[in-house]
Amino acid sequence: MASSPDVIVIGAGVLGLCTAAELAARGHAVTVIDPGGPNASSIAAGMIAPALESLPEDVTADRAALLKRARDAWPGFAAAHGLTLRREGADWRGPDPEAALARLLDMGFEARLTPTGLTTSDDWRMEVAPALKALARTSGVTMVRGQVMRLTGDARRWRVEANDGRVWFSPTVVLATGAGEPVAGLPDSIASIVSAITPIRGQLTFVPTPTPSRVVRGAGVYAAPCEAGVVIGATMEPGRRDLEPDPEEARRQVAAGLALLDVTAEAGPTRVGIRGATADGLPLAGSSGEPGLHLALAPRRNGWLMGPLVAAITADGIEGRPPMADAAALDPLRFA
Image (tube, rainbow, N blue to C red):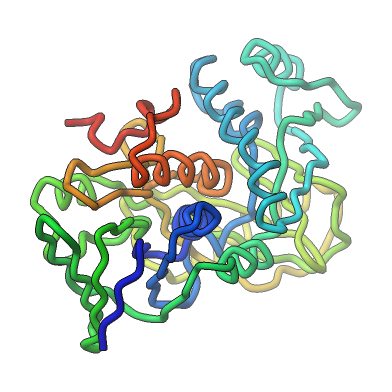
């Protein structure tokens, strides 16, 4: 059996689904092919956090401004797709809040001191499961459960083959496979780009406890609101793809997160996801240089933050529109 949508998106993480929803809103028939089950986007806290993601990193003011512009793409995108954007801000309860405040203000973020640290209104969040479900149900998007095993392209179209023999044809394919290995059949130049993505293992733990009003963060740990409690995370372990939780790390993490909240509770299940990262920490979004093949990959720990911006850049490239100003920073060929 074969079908021929306008665009095939391979991967149903936040970058893949945001891109599919954006293309569908522009009138394209989109098929998303994904093996199903948890992925790095579903095993995440849904933080849209340009400020407190920039704080512990040695980022420039220009990088911080880019992250803020990515955040600013969310209100319109959320409204267009019926998503609930949580704009309650976030708290920092790490060491030296005065120095943290000065750094945030220097990078152009809003922040102020509180009795327990500082707070910023610049960080938002999404409820992960409802958002992914809503994006998958976008009119014009067809979700297909399947494992893509091979891509074959020519001057007119791409042939996408699943491991059960199903085949799809489309002039346009978006590779949104996270930190996955290169799909067989990719041109060598694109396989090299995908192979250069660093997998980063992250684990977080659900804790049933009174839900805080906003995300609370400290040095190396966060506690994010979720239904019936919090998720506490998250590790950053480059080079690892194993999915078995580390109980000792979970205990340490949960203890640190509960200390941030000043509560006691018993930990629930721990989940592990594998993120992908490029050499500069920004995602790959846009044309691969091969006709009809586009990338939406490797957002490191900022997949939810970058989703609508990656979607817009990728959709513009597919439609041949002039690139927006931020497209160059996410150009998949920038390392060539």
